[in-house]
Amino acid sequence: MQSEAYKKVERDFSIKRQHAQSDAKRFKKNVYDDNPKLAEIEDKINKISIKSIKSRIFSDDLSRQIEQDKLTSQLDRLNREYEEQLSIIGLSKRDFEPKYECSKCGDTGFVGNKMCSCFNQQLINESFKQSNMFKVKDENFATFDFGYYSSSNDKEKYGIEKSPLENIDAIRKLAYNFSHNLEDPAQKNLLFTGSTGLGKTFLANCVASETIKQGKSVIYQTAPILLDKMVDYKFKFNKTDSEREEYDKIFDVDLLIIDDLGTESMNSAKFSELFNILNTRLLKNKKILISTNLTPQEIKREYEERIFSRFVGDFIICRFVGEDIRLLKKKLTR
Ligand SMILES: Nc1ncnc2c1ncn2[C@@H]1O[C@H](COP(=O)(O)OP(=O)(O)OP(=O)(O)O)[C@@H](O)[C@H]1O
Ligand SMILES: [Mg+2]
Ligand SMILES: [Zn+2]
Image 1 (tube, protein in one colour):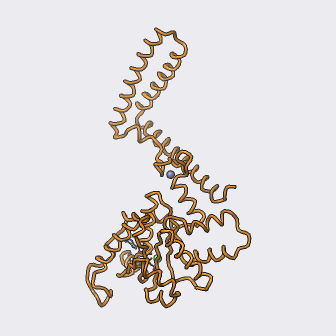
Image 2 (image 1 turned 60 degrees about the vertical axis):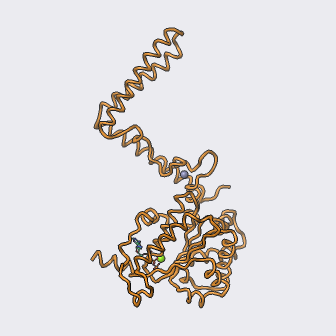
Image 3 (image 1 turned 135 degrees about the vertical axis):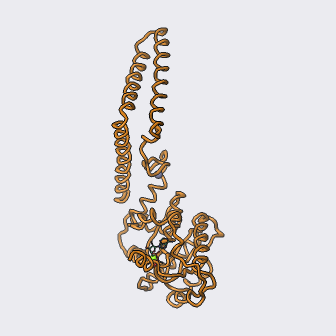
């Protein structure tokens, strides 16, 4: 049986497809309204095409050949004329085709009988209620703004030798390479640490976007929601197939992003789920990106040693420094 999420995504895709098609139709109609000549030529092309089909069916051999040649050359001429008219207004035939979001599957969700990665990702978004996935359209490497990071070195203020700008430049490069090396066993996982508003979630979204762009799957979830969900699942008596699938995805998805670690209220059940995620994914060489306000020292204090030792060995610790960008933005708009 198909899950609710699956049916919903199927419906959304069908709507998306219809939108692209009706947008294309509307665009063509507007162009034709402004350029009636195009409509005229198309009309002629259609009539001659019909004639050509008829002549193929009804005429005898010799007269058919002569008629066909005549019609073909007429069609060639009209098609050329049509394209010329279009190019005068800076368009080509391709501009009338529907603009599908996914060029691989034309928003059908399938390539042949294989599920397209865009459909798979949408399924994940749906079952994990990944509202931030709307954000990755705005928060990605192309929209990343260095302007919020100061270029002045101030060890006393920032606690590091480098300027916040040099620092973020290095982290951004690490993050970009990370998203392109997910399958590499030598590639370590990433831990973003730093105080509030320094762009940790933004950069995590950049990584998500870059990963999806490569046709890979991403789960983004905040630690409190993810761990609650997992504990609920563990204690649930009757598990449905789609709940089981969802749970398994946490361990199988190409990239798992856990945001806001340290904001959840911890208990032993959640500890063991967190340990389970880290352990299983590390063993399977499935990458994790964790973002937190805690410093490594605080992680050591708040989490068990076995969790901490994972962080030290298998993660690159990226320390964000600078000014709170939320505050900077407010100052700018004032
Ligand atoms: N590189 C950037 N370019 C443009 N905008 C950014 C950038 N980094 C962060 N922002 C914006 O600054 C704000 C704060 O960033 P973000 O939410 O990523 O901070 P954070 O480090 O995750 O904070 P918290 O610890 O509170 O979760 C957001 O509105 C975000 O869109
Ligand atoms: Mg954040
Ligand atoms: Zn697709």
